[in-house]
Amino acid sequence: MVTLQQTTPLDPSYLESLGFVWHTDSDESSYISDRLVCITEAEAEAYYEATNSLYEMYIEAAEYVIENNLFHEIGIPFNLVELIKESWEHDVHWHLYGRFDLAGGIDGKPIKLLEFNADTPTALFETAIIQWAMLKQNNLEEESQFNTLYESLVENFKRLVVLEEDTESFEEQYEGWKFLFTSIKDNPEEEQTVRLLQHIATEAGFETEFAYIDEIEFSNEEGIFYHDEPYELWFKLIPWEDIALEESDLAMILTHIIQNQKAIIFNPAYTLLFQSKGLLKILWDLYPNHPLLLESSFAPLRGQKQVKKPIFGREGESVSILDENTQPIQSNGGEYDNHKMVYQAYTQLPQDSEGLSYQAGVFYAYEACGLGFRKGSKILDNMSKFVGHLVK
Amino acid sequence: MKQIKKLSTIAAATGLGALLLTGITGCGESTQAPQEQEQAKGAFLIIEEISEGKYKIKDEFPAEETRIVLKKLDGTEKVLTKEEMDALVKEEAAKIDEGTSNLTKEQPAEANAGGMGLGETIMASMAGAMLGAWIGNKLFGNQNYQNNRKASYKSPSTYSRSKSSFNKSRSSKTSSTKKSGFFGSKKRSSSSHRSSFGG
Image (tube, helix red, strand yellow):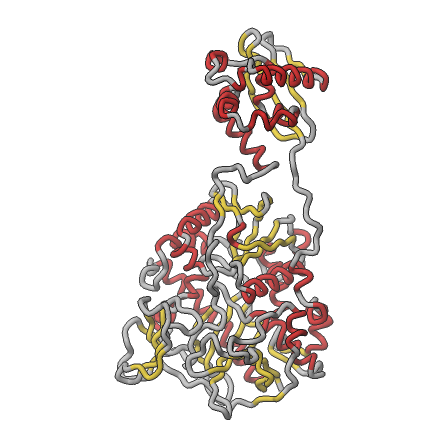
């Protein structure tokens, strides 16, 4: 059973004053749980070690995909392949941050990789800011969390310039390259996530600006412009596969921009390899029976309960749980029904006394650096709740 | 493990403490004063005399102040004074009003024969457009002017180089190579928000 500690909930008006505007779900319930998951220091350590190991494994698997030209197998749109290879070759295409979704790790259950949101991860605001705000509100200032996400991002932003672990020389090396932060219009959650990242980059010492994607000008030869100002660094909370499939012209221009070295884009295009759930199958091929992995395949697994999910699905859409005979037990409909699917062995998530399931999200920014939980029904979807934590 | 921290230490060490008090909204709007757009206020223009009384633009760059260097047939160079420039622009403006300027004529023989008068050549340049900003509107909408202007540059590459270097320092909106408006109609959530399965 998941151990929880009750707290006094944060006031919505305070959350809004922080810039956290998506505090209430469409059914009027609070998106932020007023309980905290209590974990031990050993459990935190285990999440930390597992996440760092998994990142290493993802690097190996991505290298394997590139060397063996398996882009098609894992569902990568052909018009991003050049860009992915280009970004993989050069250190300047530094991975800013990602979030591993993990099963287990508490309640005596082993940690298992579910997937890696490496390209456009959210839940950043909740993890980096809101769960600290919960401690502050409840006078728990002397309590601990496995959570240096904020300062780890400050450091990793500096690494985009210094390209090494030690960030001491950032101020010396930073030549004033301007950093543009971008989301799609009319999505407050995404916009505020991006503005938080902009805030952190500004603290790191960058000159920054925010623009919606449709206001930005792109040129093969000249790069990325907003209000006629060129930007050498660009962060976009827009999935690479959406760029490839919905705005193929943009995919082509961005490829030229990278080849002409006119701008550097975050997260880099190669993070789409990590984001593809097709990589779960590659990982299983490279590390069969690894304790952190669940068996994964492009064909239904034989004789075991499993989860069928689309290679680039989001928010639990088009995900089904299948029984030993591959008959669906529980299904979420969605727009990804016709996409290529991955079959991953089923694992039971830790539950609370109300039967709700808990899934860990561990952020990675150069190393594992922040933990948060989500709770919901067995398939976590857009109505799942964020749950903060305490290290006891 | 150094990633396990107390709020009291972490709030003191980073901007997180301040953020918990004030939020990101104030800073999201970028607290910096909007940057003064770097605009070229003038141009450095080199005009070459290619035959008696006929001129072409050899090169042109954005500059703080407008300077025109004239390379004459005999090989000497002369920098035009402010008065000379103003006089030439004024003279040309009068011709435009009378309709006698080659700049606004359709395919003037002179332009094809190579070169225009000095006043016309200056007005065809970016520098001319800046010097005579008050007649600029009269000219910019005129298609003949746009065509003749191209012809008064010594080579097509001088024209396009000049145009693009001005676009960089003035306005890039006019550059045809830039594209924008991507995802303009997109409203739905797209990032991997609370994505994934729990099983």
